[in-house]
Amino acid sequence: MNIELQAVTKIVHMVSKCPHLEPIIGSNDKTLLTDGHIDVHSSESHSKATFDGRVHVQVKGRKLSGNMKLPRTFPITRTDLAGYLKNQGVLYFVVYINPKTGKALPAYALLNPFKLQQLIDGMASQKQVGVRIKPLPTDPERIEGIVKLALRSADEKPSMRVDSRELDFSRITVYTDGSLNLDTPVRLTRADHDYTLVLETSGGMVLSVDEELVITPAEYVGEVTTLTVSCGDFVFHHPTRRRVDKDTVELELSKGLKIQRSGTGQASTGSISLMMRETLRERFNDVGFYLACADQQVFSIDGVETAVGQAAADDQEELRGHFEYLTALMALCDHLGVDPSLVDLKPLEGKRGNQLLGLHGVMLRGEEINVEHDEPTGRILQPMGRWSLQLLVTQDTTDGKWVCRDLFHPELGLQFVMTGEDEAGETQICRVTPYEVLEREHLPFTLNLHLDNLVNAYSSIIEYPEAANFANTTVLNLVRAADLVAIRKPEFLEAALTLNSWLISKQGALPHHQINHWQIAARNGQLTQAERFEIRSLKGQASRNELDKPLLIEAACAILLGDEEEIAYCLSRLDEKQLVAFRDWPIWELHSPHTTPEDGQH
Figure 1: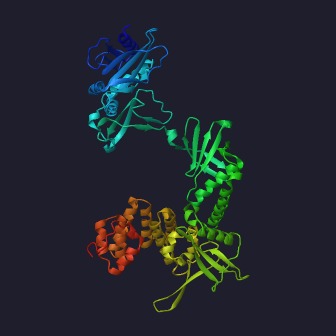
Figure 2: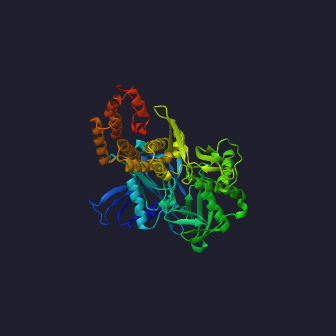
């Protein structure tokens, strides 16, 4: 029995069934390293016009007894591997034949250049290595996929040593033999898969690279859904869904709360994992949902209930105690108008947290403050992590009881006045809002500002001469606060814009109100073309001395327009006193670089 002839005959027979392939393989071939080739055509009718390329082929025949399984590897010498590499790769066939029955089991290894180089590099001093082989499919379409991949991978050039990390590529293309299952994540390695990876650079260059690749289907990466997940009073919208495996889906309700759901319909079950997050709102919602699930043993997804496979509520004693603490802090925040998403819990452990619990008892439960105070009213700054609360301690005139109140509460029911001397040395008394009581440096870090009541606060004193000036100062302080504390920037800029718009409605579009409007807009994004025209118009009026404080207005407009040369010129015209005042205004923060007259021409 001629095993080699039978092996070649088997391969030729299988390849001949493929409409786009033409095998040219000899059983007594004397060509070095190969036994022939397979021509690849773009059409089922083969001609020079349809010829796409040629794949080198090596065929080996081996005996296999009836009780033996197909081997996983086949030994190939270093010399042969090196020869195949010089020949741009080879499609290596091994056909195992049972001499008694004549049954043939064909296998193959696609030895593309990168795989050959990897095999050679890993041999050390070995003379041969076991190369992994796979059963050859019987489906003609699958065989064509293997041969076409062999043709495509012939472009690989290990000698180039391309580092893909240094390439500015615009496209990645992975060519496979069509056998990959991309329903689940897969890691492409040359030991386990046949593929070639091609990069296209932004300059149009196309080249094959020797890299491993992880392909993750979108549903395993995670996608935002339109689902609503609820339990008790706690509701999460638009969770991220990610498939964990074939039977399990994970819903990420938040960064600290995840549900893994297995099964479908009535048979589905879910397990919940909880991780403590840092801010009050996040942790309150996460822990509240978790404990509600522990009590009810179900949660619902778009109204459909799912059983919970987690411990009963009796095992949550410590967590429940912590949740009571969170609930008290949430109630205090609600009472003071504080955004709990700003409150970091870590700094509140211990003394500060106990102080806030005491404050909760005083302000929400009517507990009495145990203090001795000489004045009927006193201000308290209560730390809350990096933030603070501004409070008032007052004595009730009816029963003498000391109470703690929110300095900025819309229904505080107290009036504030400020005293000072005028130029003649006479004492002047001005009606003010609580926002004048608050020091400028404390504003960015005060949580209970009740900025939604800002306009109402100034409306209540508008009949007093200095009210508009006070309001304008608060606009500037809010803009400064937005520059200083990024996390509260939207909040402060919105409040500043609202108050400034109210001032315009009361006083008209005065230059400083216009400049404030534009500098707020600039902090929210690029100024529009219409706004830039308006700024140029105002700057022109100032340059013609049609306005008060023209030099300051010109400098501010130049900064808003971003004209560095003009900015330098305008600043050079300010005297020392004007320059000091100008640099204290928030418009200065929009000047980049912060060029001072000392740096330039003054």
